[in-house]
Image (cartoon, rainbow, N blue to C red):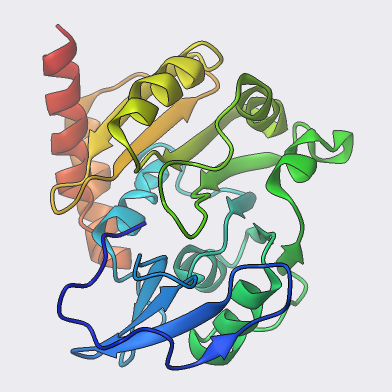
Length: 262
């Protein structure tokens, strides 16, 4: 989730508007295409000349799991957005299955049309479905290594799913060493309640504010990891070299978070 564009043209250049769901539209500004759901709020972005890269910095932070698990087998996104995470994971982790759950068919349609989302294949499965139904389905329990959660409606007041039932179901879907990463952008009243609920369920929870906006990316570990910062910085250098992601700043953010807790 990103704040509205103050200098962008009027949103709504292309509209997918299946009845019963918020319409999906785009704007383009300085070489970046933005996704909207009937409001100026930015729901995702793609640099047109680099459609396979992750444009928004907080979305890049949703890849912090790489510091702890370089070779996941099953990566799931709850909330497709502009498909940035889905495309990146599908292209860069050929050993992994990638699943994306999206309730709004307009979002799926506009991602396929305007955000270079490839069609489903043997490793990619984009499903039109309620995220709560997905995590509550017993078939999905103990089946996921990485769960990336970014669930917002057109008003962006806070995550649309943030109950104890939801976060417990997310935990139940993870393997023993799995991680959930979630964005808790929204009204300040939603921050503490989300963090407290997640912390009551997961073995260890850390969070890193996004420097350019109000997004806070939370990493929730099903089993508490050992935070050896020398090793994490080494892994960060490898991530930067192989994937061009700013992983050193992630480690610095985690280290600062730990210092703030003391």
